[in-house]
Image (cartoon, rainbow over all chains, first blue to last red; front, side, top):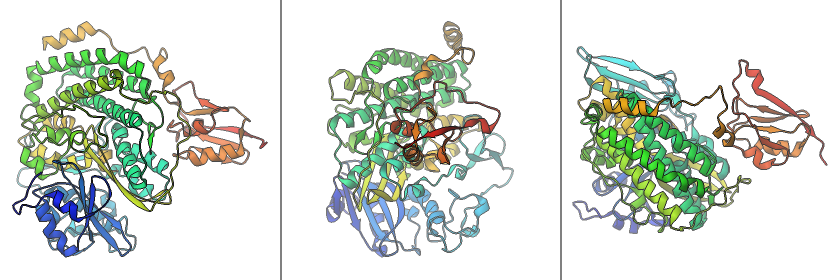
Length: 512
Length: 111
């Protein structure tokens, strides 16, 4: 357990709070007291999320902190004070992204005159009302952080359409020609208002949306959502269903890391390596379809369990060959100097920055931060027995590639263990019947999962079996926070696709 | 780079014969539904249209209208209509006209 200078620990704070869910504590404080407490929490806990929600009396601000030592979350809840004197991101730099969101959703300024980036709303809505506060004070262009381009530099616009199959993303690359001086990102093109659309929906229908939050993270996001709903309504999951979910999560991790390898091959001009990784990726997607009925493992999870079992024979017969081909590919990639040279030292995120920005998943682990919910925040005591999280340094593209490779190995080991050791798994492979709806509430739950991109969080409030409030926080939301920092770290123009491929984030996960 | 030239040569051509030949693997992948004309009752059609998360199914007068351009092949409707409904055998839906993606089925009588 981390201790701050005052000797305060997160567990001590959590003991003062209320709890309706194991591993999660709620602590209510006044708006005035929140600032001090956040300053005390910053050095001892990982900032995970911040959002605003409607409450009986006005609006509430909720901050979620993670305890990566002993596992668990602390929700700090305070009345929303629009005139927060100091921006939270001054003590919690990781919270800046959320501060920008809160301005566009609820009209809440960070405080202290700190300007905000554009995250959800396009420029054409510059003076619109906040998205969630119709009739509220109109937004002001004066609050926006300006793009600073000085001297001989220009802002080179790249996107939002950057190539076939790539997500919409505007990258404003500030450069004098070769070196990257700064980068501005705009992702509002893909915002779909999923959280808002969930309100009033049944849990089954809302889970359908959570699953589609980011197509390359369907299992992870749906799992976090399902766990939030199960925590809210007190629904127990059968051990076999829980392991089956973990199996799907690891298959999702495997194909994503191989997808990242293919993107790295494309970014470094290694076309044969790219093609080999893409063949392997396609084989993984086909294996997913044989095992779970869908290439991207959609339509598997439901609140309370899984909708279908796995074809374990198909999976078992493919594992050894998949691993051999993967190892051969990685060995040859790491033996290629021109490839390794392009990755080494590019897009470096130092461990200090990873901590400060609350990074999660492979991006954090490549910077030496051993945060992995499969080890620290285990939901089931049996699923991840003997799990070994990957960890590398110094946080550059090569370290992220190595972490990805190590995670594929560990995922294959886990999958092999589950399939061959007689671990109870749901294996009744059949077309699923109609989804089950649940009633209950009002109640709230926090769900989490270590997805292929890191920690996904879902805060869910349920009333009468329908969603009354939802907050999705996919891992991509956290890690985009560091992407522009990585680009600024002594890179040149042609490093941008390499850094992007090594981060392997989705715009959809941010612009949900 | 000789390593990769050798790997590439050893692999040879890796593309499939698609679309000249069908992709056998695709037969098991999720595909939009098709229904047997006149065998979907109105109450079932209404339940399916409510269950469809992308509003691809709609009951219009005496017909069930399926917009394949909106369908995401999630299979929710087929879970309700396992008798008179099935997955389309073909995954290829490309067409030059949007209207070709809209098909309709005659509703059956309520028994």
